[in-house]
Image (cartoon, rainbow, N blue to C red; front, side, top):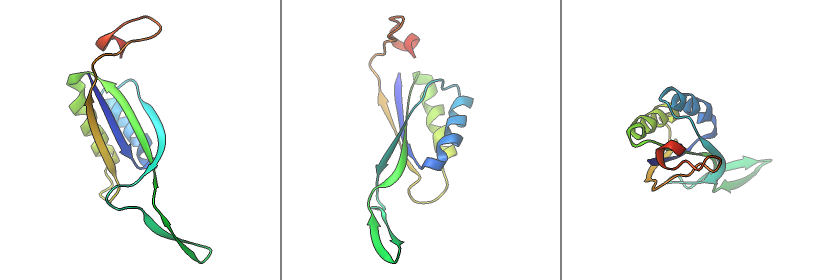
Length: 112
C-alpha cells in the first residue's frame, strides 16, 4: 500500500477529487494548510501598506491506495492540479506498512 500525499492550491480540490474518483480512489482526507516552496510567498498591498505573505494557503490531500493504483492516483492529481503556474504544489508517495479498520478489525489492503 502507498500513502499518496499532495499539497495543491485550494481551487484545485474539486478537480483533483473528481480525477481521483475516476481512477478508483475511494477514500480521501483533506486538510487546509499554509506553507511555501521555492517562491517564498509574495508581497501584497492592503490599504496602501505593503506586507509580505510568507505562508500561502494550500490544501493537503492524503489517500492510502493499493500499490497498483498509486501511479494512476499520482497522474490524476498531477493532471487535475496543473495550472502551469508556480506554486501548483507537490505530490509525495510513501510506503504504508499496515492499515487496520477499527470497526471490523480488517487489516492490510482489505482495510482500505
